[in-house]
Amino acid sequence: MASNDPQANDQQRDRLRDISESDDSAIASLVAIRVAEAVDGSDLDAKTFELVNIAALIATGGDEASYLLHVQAALDAGASVDEVTAILTAVGPNVGVFKMVAAADPLATALGINLAAEEADAEERGRG
Image 1 (cartoon, rainbow, N blue to C red):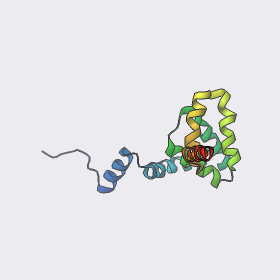
Image 2 (image 1 turned 120 degrees about the vertical axis):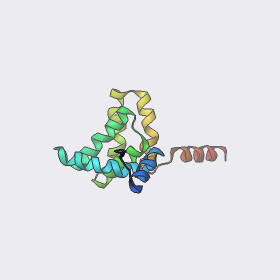
Image 3 (image 1 turned 90 degrees about the vertical axis):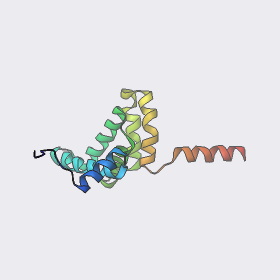
Image 4 (image 1 turned 180 degrees about the horizontal axis):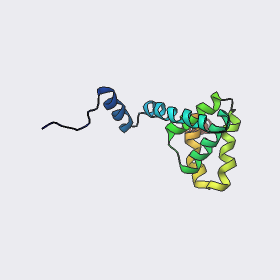
C-alpha cells in the first residue's frame, strides 16, 4: 500500500526544529518575509509602519524576537531612538501600566540597552 503521507526534507525539518526551540534568528527571518509583504501592501512608509507595529507589540504583549525585528527595522527606516521610546509613553494611557512595564525590558533590549546590568551598576555605585 502506497503512503500518501507528506515527506519533509532536511531543510524543512531544521526550520521546524529551530522554530520549536524558539531560535530568535530563525523566527525573525520568517517574520521578516511577512513584514516586507505587509509594508508593500500598506499605504504607510516603512518608518511609520514599523512604529505602528511597535505600538501593537506593546499593546498585545509581543515577544522579544518581534521587538528586535521591528525596532531594528524602524531604526533602519530612519526612526530615532527617541521616537521608538516615545511610543511606550504615547500608548501607555491606552494599554495600561502593566503592559507598559512588561514592554519596557524587551523594548530596551531591542535598542541594545541592558536594564538589569545598568541597575546592578547603579546599585554598586550606590554602595561605593
